[in-house]
Amino acid sequence: MKQRLGILTSGGDCPGLNAVIRAFVRRASADEMSVLGIKNGWRGLVENDVEPLTRSSISGILPRGGTILGTSRFNPLEDPDSLTRLKQTWNKYDLGAVVAVGGEGTLSAALELWQEHDLRIVGVPKTIDNDLCGTDKTFGFDTAVSIVVEAIDRLHSTAEAHHRVMVVEVMGRHTGWIAAYGGIAGGADVILVPEHPFRISNVCELLERRRTQGRLFSIIVVAEDAKPSPDEDFLDEATRAEIYQHDCLGGIGMFLAREIEKRVGVETRVTNLGYVQRGGTPTASDRVLATRFGIKAYEMIVAAEWGRMAALRGTQIISIPLEEAVIDIKRLDEEIYRVAQVFAG
Ligand code: F6P
Image (cartoon, rainbow, N blue to C red):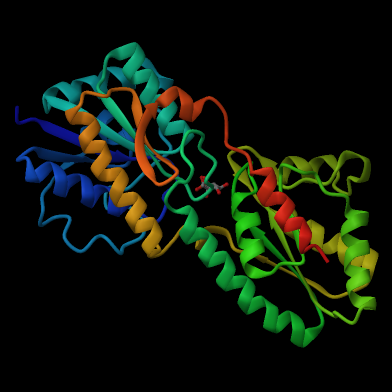
C-alpha cells in the first residue's frame, strides 16, 4: 500500500545526516512512497513545519554536513500540549510511519511515543560521540575522529618548533571514544578520558620524563568530560560546576594547561576543537554507514518493525529494540584504552 512516510533529524547535528535522508527518500521513492521531511526534529511535528522530500529536493546533499531538515533538542514529551499538537500533525498528513534519526535523547522519546502512544516510529542512531549502545558504530564518529587527527598532525609541527606542550580538548560527552581514537591515530603522548579519572602528578611526571629523554614537546588529548581523580583534584568547586555541565561540557583543557605550566614550568597551549568536529563533509566511511542505515530504516517500515532501531553489528546492518540502544551509554572499550596507554610517554 502506498503511504506517506516522515523523517526527522533531532539532537546535535552530525556529518552523515543528509546521507540518511537521501538514502531513505531514494529507497522509498523507488516504491512510489511519498516522504515528508519534518523540520527541526520533533518540533516540526508539533509546529506543523514540514516539507515534501522528492528525488530532486535531495539531489546533491550526500557530501553536505549538517542536515537539510534542521535539528533541535526539543522534547515533545515534556508537556501535554506539545504531544497533542504532534499527534494532530501526524494525523493531518496521515503518516504511515516516521524515521527518527538521533542520539540517546531522540531515541528515548521515539521509544516512549511508540510504547505509550502507538506512534509508528523506527530509529536511526547518530552521534559523533559513538556512545550509543546496541550499535558497533554511529556515523559522524569517523568524520569527527579524522578532524581531530588532522588537527593533531598540525599541532605536532608547531609544538615541536616551540618546544611546547599542546593540550587538545575534544568532544565525546561522557565517553572517551573520540579522544582515544583521535589520540591513537594522531600519535598523542597522553590521552585522558572520562572512563579513567587522571592523576595530574602522573601526567606531569610523564611530561618531565619526556623532556629528560630529549623529547621537548608533547601532545595531550583530553576529552571534554575527563576529570582529575578526587585525591589530586586541582579544580575548585565553582570551576568544576562550570566545566562539567551535563548539557554543555567544556573547558577542562584550559585548566589542565594552567596546572601543567604551574607544575612543570613548560609553555603550554590549548586548542579546543569544539564544533569543528561536528561540521563539514562526512568521510566516505560515514557516508556508507549512513546510507546503509537509511535503506534499513525503510526496510524496517516495510516489515512493520516499530520501536526498533537500525544498528551495525560486525559487518551487518540489523534491527534491534530501541530499549537496547537507550538502556545505558556505551563507554570506551577497555582494549582501546589499553592500546592508548602503550603510547603514553
Ligand atoms: O553529542 C554530540 C556533542 O557534540 C557532544 O560531543 C557535545 O558535548 C555536545 O554535543 C554539544 O552539544 P550542543 O550542540 O548542545 O552544544
